[in-house]
Length: 487
Image 1 (spheres, rainbow, N blue to C red):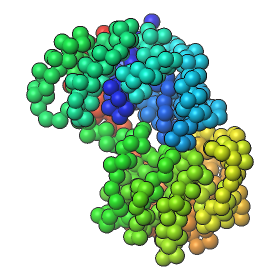
Image 2: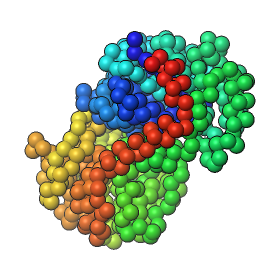
Image 3: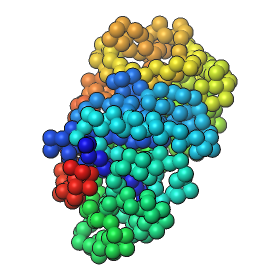
């Protein structure tokens, strides 16, 4: 029988994804066949799988930590927010339309069978399945019909380790409080607790850990320090972008990107953040696009028409046109590419209410959104330089027009992608992962007059996973974790 352990948390952003990835790499290095699993995820950061679907990028990273290819079974239910009260539903990698929050809450229990089928398929090919929960099981108002936390744990018989984030404070209250509010049968699934993100001398919290164990009866599975290597991993939740900074002149080249309300695949920019030749910043609502930027990048969007309207309400369109008039450069990625054209139409209401809008008019193309989503790994060469690029496509709609006769890149099968303005200063592409390759990144930054540090970003991520696994091996009770999982 395959061993399994579920990592749940006392809240969102307590480090569940990173701890799960670290444990995936740790047990993989010990020679086990490990698979990651998350029953239900909510994120606009999605990855394309080899079996032609999409899952949350956190599970793709965890698959990478396991040194295996990501599959749709690793995250069978994905909700991609399109508004404050609605999301696109993706089931086993395929788009299934939009759901309001109320409708999803009422019908999510029907997805339990789908979730369990995926879990059992993964279990059949693994020695250990590490499962990540969502939010917190202590949100007992969401317990009815739950498939993300205790509903899944009990249905599958998977033991749970509960994570508390000490960096937030009140970690004793968070863990003991979860024990107090949980149903007794749910509470019984929790076999131990982990403390995450501790700074300083760990001995100073020994009494706190003993008190948690005394009040809950759960095993103390250890305390992880603040994992600095996690900063080199792609973040799953846009909450981390709230800690962004304004674009300054600290780097050799200044690149800025507006932070859409439904920003998607924002880890496209991780390689720029890591490059010492670049000063990159997301621009939050309420601030203008910086006049001193050398390049403005329009990122991907889960609701392109809505975010285009946001761009205009923020006055960012005026900032962008001024930037172009003064000789600045612009690059649009996926939804950002669509915005740069003359018009976007969504006649079927794929990303919200049916409608259309004038684009920014900086590229001579038009986009019509359609029901079929493009999901595929992609590789090709930049045009006209010919530098190799690798990434993935994940979008709805087709973009056509005279501007497409000047493509941004050529796929390996000869297909053109994207468009470039006649003066070469405005460009757009559907390719995500554009900056991952050191060679491609250097070619894209060269017109800005800067020499990139080079180096493929993937090597940085791999090293970070190894570093995190090593720290967890020292700071957690791995033998106890293995016993609870059934190894």
